[in-house]
Image (cartoon, rainbow, N blue to C red; front, side, top):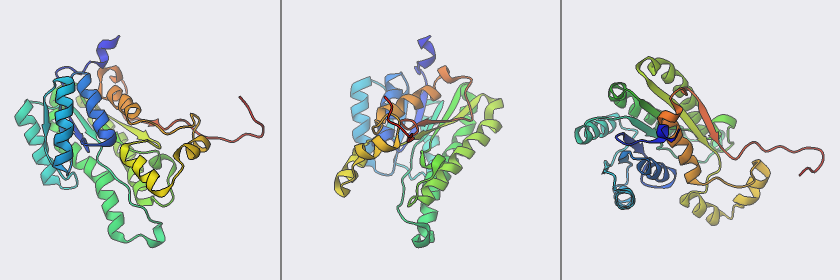
Length: 262
């Protein structure tokens, strides 16, 4: 039964793969046997992560500094991947970041930036990768959305809209590419305690645990590795009959009743 989770012989691109959730996704894919291409704008973080993963797993890890909002750089990323490994099986569209502003004060340039990074970049990467994923025979795309794309987050409206759009891109791409045996799914993390997030919480005095106790059934923020587990599942043959879906990894819904319960 565990054979479906084995990624030996597969090649995966992970955008935003140098830090945070992307780093943990890359780590787990490598642990499952995949060779990796890590892409992000900052070469230093990519190289540090690549060295760490090579030492831990023995896998071949290629670093390609890439701005995922630039279609030409994205095409070069895919070309270098295929040139180095000979094929491509998995694409993880993880690059993303939120700006913070209410709509009434949001400059149009801020809206454009969030849509570019959180929605357009996934299209650019998928568009460049799809010819090779079709040849794979078990091609898989996993888009990293957000709980904000499901429920919306005031003050992060452009990000929320982009992530909602990413989920619809996931559904339509799954429909269009399913006949070529390419599956397309999304994972929507909720509050996740990445290193960057924890630094931000400490800087602003945000009580993440207190907020999570109120907002989520499990009463705590998620861990990056918990998101990675869901991504690795959807990228593997264990999810061979799942496509077009968005899996929330968000600690469950919060709800208030009229009495206290166990």
